View (tube, rainbow, N blue to C red):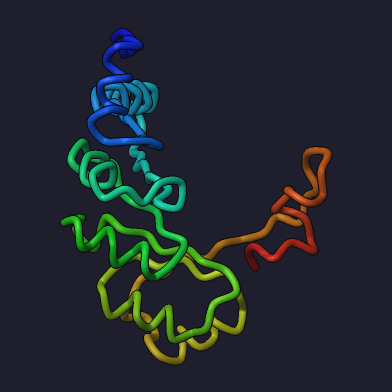
Length: 160
């Protein structure tokens, strides 16, 4: 797989204007295939982080090659469903949200992760054992050298 030539890129810019973003679906497929091969002996699901790029065509493509979609907002979840991703292939994980967003996610039929005790208690009261839920745990471990980007320590906003 070779890079696009300067002439090709200039023609794209002349046609569509700038700034313009060019994505290579074949390269995305190739990278995903390599990832799947690396874990071929395990029962593993892979999730594309929707927040990294919410381009509808990219979402359609990664879903079409078998990748599930991880969403950090209810609008991202709705976008995944809008492009045709089945609800059981969408995972909603957000932090610091109102319980009504979790209720909306449940109404959409998508998978939900909860990262606060108060929302977990509300979820249990509302759904009991009738709807599966993931719990985002915080290990209370300080790893790495920068507190501002570390997410596993005891003062992190992420997880229970």
